[in-house]
Length: 419
Image (cartoon, rainbow, N blue to C red):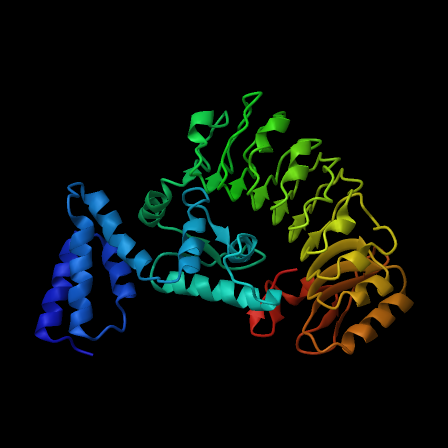
């Protein structure tokens, strides 16, 4: 639709306000796509000029103009999802499923009942961010999960500027020591120190951060570093703690007192033998200990009645005590080595599972029970510890066997969920 002369003049002024920088112009174009009323264009130009007052440096001026697109997102949860992407290192290609999980962990998706609904919402949010040029899609043919996401450097700078008063973001910066205590202020809400080589913690460091909700230390610590027990003592509001990819043999006992924790992520902690008592973490929704190959037991797991996600694949925990899953009836996602058919068929909320059944009879009974369920489910069920060589398709939403042979992405209704 052709623009009238007044609107065309305003558009030229907006391009000028963006200093002609392509990322600024493209982002504004995406943000204003479909707007036809001249008064809205006029108002947008006024807001752009207001955001640029006093800005003499071109890059700073462009950053403020890019913030216009962030402000127009409107929904605070969508804005927080966008800001979460900036916690990753610069130029990081992030799996879209990893981002959806991160949104869920931070409770940015909303209180939706099923993981399928949460995934649909998360993928919709990413599409919205991509449509207004705040995120970029990258096709990755070598990746199991296909498309990955990336932030343009200037977009990320804008996000970091927005978060500067409430966050420490030093991801991928080659840090050798944890930031000094004066940086851990009572205004902090998110800290990202992922992908560093931190080898030194102050012995008695005990940050007093009553608002800190997200702490990302995944792949950020050196091989022999020890986190002092005092470190978590005053982080009582922590919701998301990611310690994945470390070689520590045990965790600080003070983790047991993080009673508001919703997600504890310990993937690929190959040397981890012991996790502190879990029984007090009754708010926990997610426990991911995938590939903690030295882990032999969990204490207090039966107390985690709100748990939705449990991954214990590739650990030394081959079986849970009989009746354990009776306490975890809210589980929606389960990866575990060996389960009884009686246990798995009781988990009526279960949507995604990968596990082994002890014999063919149990396998067949489990399949029959799941067939009678009206809920769409996603299973990779195997007999004994051998890889199955077949796929049995029960419906459009339910398959049994080795799902990894189905291709790079497997359909789950109208959405996609990884096993």
